[in-house]
Length: 123
Image 1 (spheres, rainbow, N blue to C red):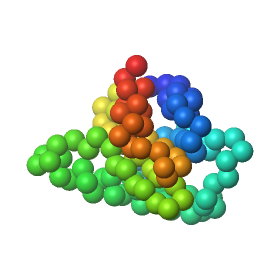
Image 2 (image 1 turned 30 degrees about the vertical axis):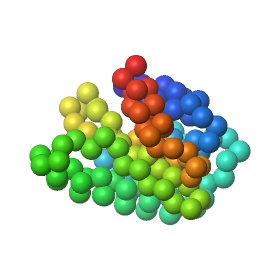
Image 3 (image 1 turned 90 degrees about the horizontal axis):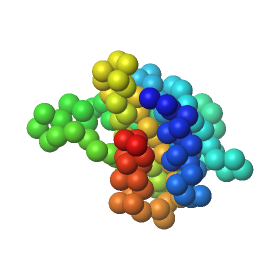
């Protein structure tokens, strides 16, 4: 899986995308970052805490996949920013150990961006 290609492809979809990151199963950023000239809304230590909380919530929801099916994506809209979160298949480890986190301006429509992201992952 070419994580840099994923980052570049998603970041180039729309100028309103602020951040694209691939996180490992410990919540550490292994690829990605902020768009140039776009300031982060959180300082570094709060970013790490946010990543861990999102990862924890995603793992908790995985407990329901036998009853409800696979999680396609999670969308969070806040006043200043919105997020799309989804698991990435990691063929090398044969599990969903990587997570994709995309932040964008809050007016972006998740019904457009989430399928576009998913499509870019299968290309």
